[in-house]
Length: 267
Image 1 (cartoon, rainbow, N blue to C red):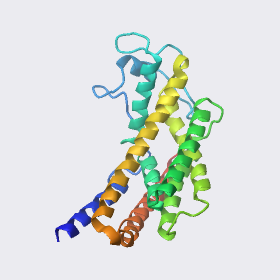
Image 2: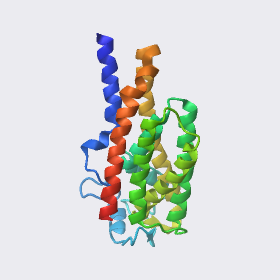
Image 3: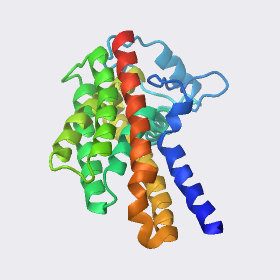
């Protein structure tokens, strides 16, 4: 009896982790890093950022060197660390849409190889467009990118419901969707304001932070699934899809579809 309740508890915990956004507003999150009294950034930097107007998601640059709270010019290492923290915060807890996409990839297959291929492909793709957009090489419109990001979440989740294993075309599809998500990361990154003299350390730090946030979600899901597998033993694989994959994928798909409609109408 105890083992049965324990299994149900971990199953419920996984489901809650995978659909945590259902209890929040169903819109693209706005990250607030310069809230008076709650800011994790230096006051001087927040003043600099507040003076910048970011038009149509274009990348804004700080013309003056970024300084710390004591007025000293921030070092390259400090800038790297600052933007790593911002990147992590953009995912945890800010990036609910990106979290759901990564979890939809996680639900595709319980094989390590499949998960590695998908996460690696997604990482490469969004890194490419994050860099291109942040450098002004491409300027995608948020009114197009944001609904497509939501649609990518819905598509992968719904696909999980009907397919028992990762399809051959999934890596190519994940790469294409990763390009979209990279544009979404870049939209937020550009709004922060970027120091001209430390642009690359800021960009690299932000991307590292995003990866840390995404991998933390995958690690948490893997830990819960591994514990569930240990408790259930041989019957784990028979229960995994009906108990978790299908209901969680349906929930994620519904959220993604709602976001798609909402963003298409609001942007």
